[in-house]
Image (cartoon, rainbow, N blue to C red; front, side, top):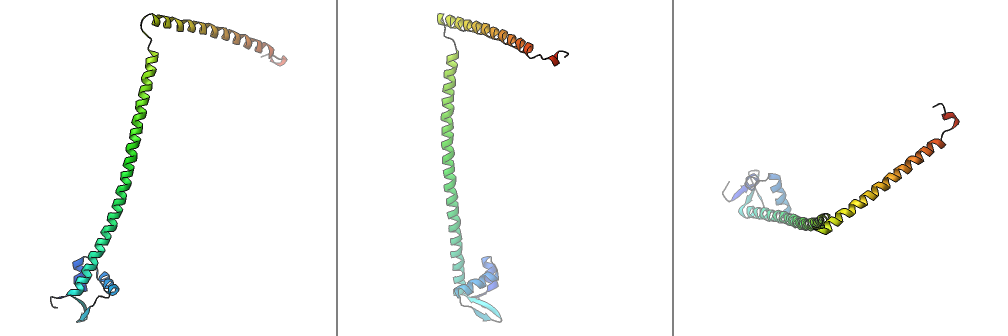
Length: 160
């Protein structure tokens, strides 16, 4: 074989593919070949055409992969924006809750001086009034229970 021709096998090995793929490219693109000693060989111009086909195919694949990667990056960017927005909303809510909690704590702390003494006496008086009211209600409930027990006794309950 002369230096200016290659077999399909040699070219396939060089390009990292198999003979079948090279044969399909030859048939699909009508690339000229020669037959020497029962082997199909390719001249330099045919080899150049096949290499060009592989380069174009590689570029096409890389563009497709690049487009996919770009799409994924856009999606991830959108998700990141959404996450940051939600984190900001959470932070604002936490600040609002802290402010509300602080205001509630301020309401529970009694004021100093004479107002504190009056405020302290007033709840105590209300507490005593509520206790006496609860006691009266408990007495009333006990009376009702006794009355119910007396009324509900029937003749068949006398031996119980």
